[in-house]
Length: 99
Image 1 (cartoon, rainbow, N blue to C red):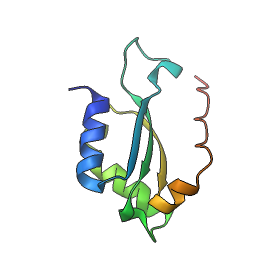
Image 2: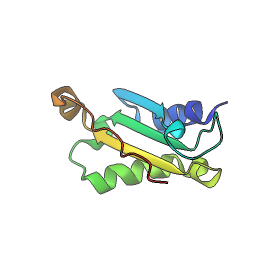
Image 3: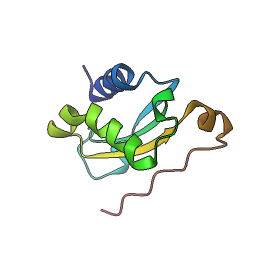
Image 4: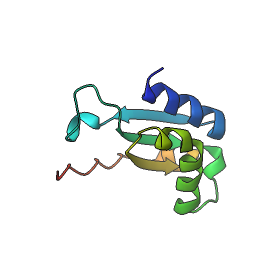
């Protein structure tokens, strides 16, 4: 199974998202072709209602601990409650790789 599929599976199981996007951004970095090391996650979950950003990011990091231990290098996280997601106009672009 691909790293992206593992991320989808783990976040779905742990956070029951109302919305989930997992985008492989490895090609924007200095890594071998077809790498799966840099991702952007856009997730809306009822479990994020009333939670601060740090708690939301911790929940995502905890769900993906195995992936980080096995080579996931970078994860850009955009975490929302369902109502925040509905009001969202656009998700910020990921920063450009400097290396």
